[in-house]
Image (cartoon, rainbow, N blue to C red):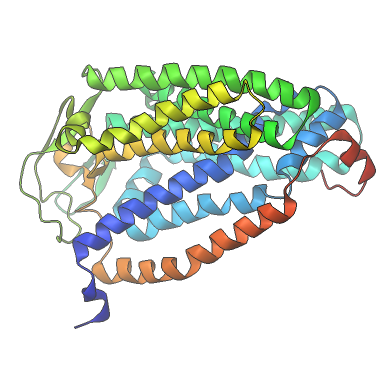
Length: 385
């Protein structure tokens, strides 16, 4: 037997669906607090030295955290080629906006300290805000559009035609998802500042984090209500599907209907744990921000992100990119993946290298851990930011 045939093709598809979720959650957790801190920068710090404190809480690690973004994009490209092709083609302008903002962010980090001029530094501070706020918003808007369904069609040769527009991406529900994304990342960034900063900065971060957690609870509940009420239609496969099939999205029948995104919860009630973690994480963070339990808040904030993102994944399974105009062309876990051999080879590489990435990341955070305050900044004049 060929080595890769030792693991069933359908099992490999499920493994990679789970790994894609892990990578997206890892990106939200690791780079999410960087974005949250960047979005908070002009508001939690008044003076130049306070802003330097805020920036230096993430300065040593933000570049490494962006590895999760690269890993997520690479996994989509390799494991789900049709998903990569259609989403990056259909969301081309949105992706361009995100990439432009994410390029602006490292430039702001590097150029801010080049001149002591207040106007120069203030301009780069707002550039850092833009480079953090815009991706957080657009990523959430993209998730909202995926849940609503993307207007694309496939012909018999599987050639894609996208029928949407850039401004069509900003529907009320997708904007709600974008605001939820901003809220949870601002909350996550606030928690990071509470742990890593002190004094007035930490106090302001608690205030903004409390507001973001409250706003996140309202938006998450409202989003769930819109799904349960049928305002947001889900998608359902109505034909038999072979989990071991090769990539061919047209080899099935599917429909859109209200309440379809709740189907998995009725079949597997344990999945209600996903939204429960989201609500508990948001509420727990809201409560803990009023206490001095700094080290406990961050894991609870992570739980909120895990719960919210997992809710999207388990609600949509097995769909990964529904089509709003041709439901039978929707991409699913079973009919849009790479070959058996490709998924197996990727899994071997992941099993080898992902633990190394995690171990190195843990070591870096252990070495660089500690409070950053004004005295530290003034004493260490060689600080890069």
